[in-house]
Image 1 (cartoon, rainbow, N blue to C red):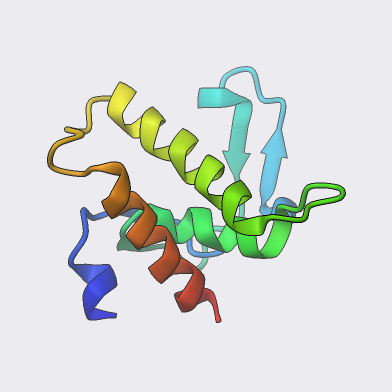
Image 2: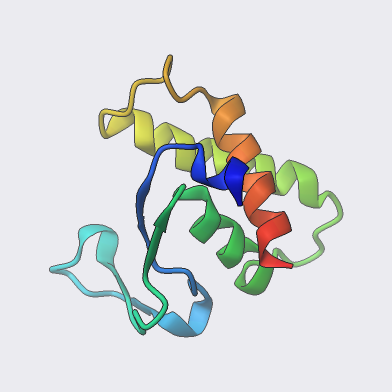
Length: 107
């Protein structure tokens, strides 16, 4: 808990999974709406990403989950940088660490 609290803080859903997502809303950012906010909290954003990956995200024929997760975190981290997060203050390695902590947290 201490390690997770040490990272950059953001609003968390804390239950991101496929059945809490509504796809195709043209007015929503990215076309996705998160439903069921009863567990809202604060922490590193990678926690929600880890929860989603652990509970709802499987690729057919997947054989290398670590490589898949690294690709997922790379896309997540790149989107943060493009939105203005300082890559020097929050490098990919920190995002990967936060994601791994999030995977442990989900268990």
